[in-house]
Length: 262
Length: 262
Image (cartoon, rainbow over all chains, first blue to last red; front, side, top):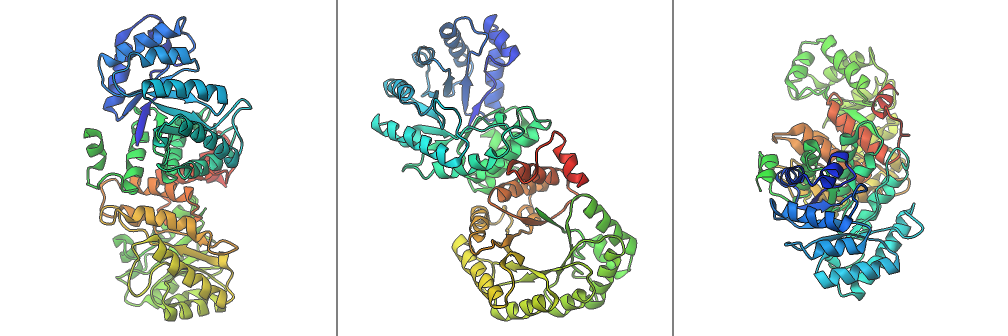
């Protein structure tokens, strides 16, 4: 499982403040803690309070790379902000994200090719998030086709069916879970799949419970990656156990500890 | 989800002792507690210490029915013990179980027809538990075919792919999960599916975690019933949440409480 730590995101108040005030220690603690907890990639998003996203992205990357050496997922709606970041990364990056709009894909896959990155592809377009599995599959197939046009390996894609909050879009849980299963069959080699996990529990009362239950269900459907909070220990326990059940790690009595020591 | 409470089983020491000594209060507490916790069916198994299984089965059923009115799953390898029980049940029962052996099916489906019961069908035969999804599917199909021969409605079947402990049969997790998905497609109306959940964590260190993670994964694959310990609150929380995600219950902020009040 590719675990993309979600916590370095300026939309969280403390992180937003740390970015504005250039408090390196706040960011570096988050980087180290997430990696220690099992994140294999760190998402980097300057967030809505940033006055200069390019500079803030550069500062974040340098600050993070000062303490951990893991791939970064550069998370911005602006291609020029992402490109500034791509010039600095020391490990192969993930662009977060393109959608299925042609102009957007053109821009993002051009960058991906130029900087040899992986790409998160959101199964949505100008008309928004689809409300069916079939529409999600159609948009995912559009992204795969464009990636192939750019000669990008299909397993360098992370297809994201777009998780919606269970409290407002309850019919979408099944659609998303089945999409994950079907995305894997779109091409060979299979694309990776990812989800912005925390979204499923937005506004609900038992967030961690909803998150970890959904994650186990998604892993049962073939999910290979998720953007999540690796500091949620119970969530990580569920993830480690789900992967154990699918025989992705060899059983030992202390399998939780063994995973974390890896 | 049809929750079959597993605790009234003489293989548990305290229960075995209660059966031998006819301690009705022990059994009745277990019956009431399991139903309060969300069990919709109670499994009844006299266990290995029973000296007279027929009498003990009768005593258990009368004792349980003295305090709760729920369907019972009569759990014995002996058809005559099951038949003694079937004469006494006040709600439509489940026979636990037949396998795919022809003689066994003949006996069990004859009883099922005579007493109008539902039946748990284990995807195994004389040669034991299969080690592949395809073999499980073949045996499940054999059971479905025989049920149809007996004019038993296919949704009165509970097909069980046989869960094995993750610590000794790690490759079987995926086979079982995929079997659950495929069993549902065997006939119309779809058969129910069930698992003896606790078996997956047998001998492991984190039993509840393994159980609840496996259960969420199985529900994602279409599981409609499980034999489990309803007194494990975290397990039930995971089950309720998984069903919520699949839109089987309407979301409300207090969805855990709402389920339990039902």
